[in-house]
Length: 95
Image 1: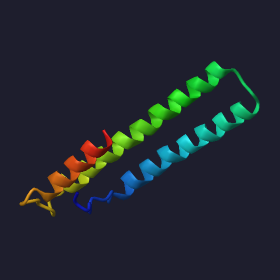
Image 2: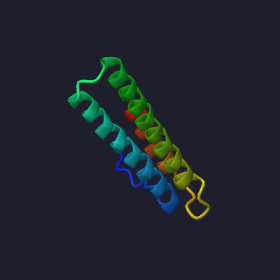
Image 3: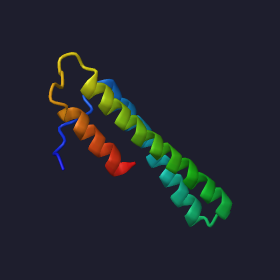
């Protein structure tokens, strides 16, 4: 396995991902409160599903940003295919 040096570089991308994760954190706190109050199981499951979907979107968004920032940047041309291999390994490992 290669050690990955792929990073999210763009400050706007970083802000966006942190904002999305902060919203998910709020959703999870809400779910905890629902469980503590012993609310309807279906409502809790609905919120869990929504949170799971939001987290999956952050996951795919992060992969997309890594591809964009690593492969499309004009300054960093990957002549030996190393970045492509790193991204492929990450995608295969987690998807």
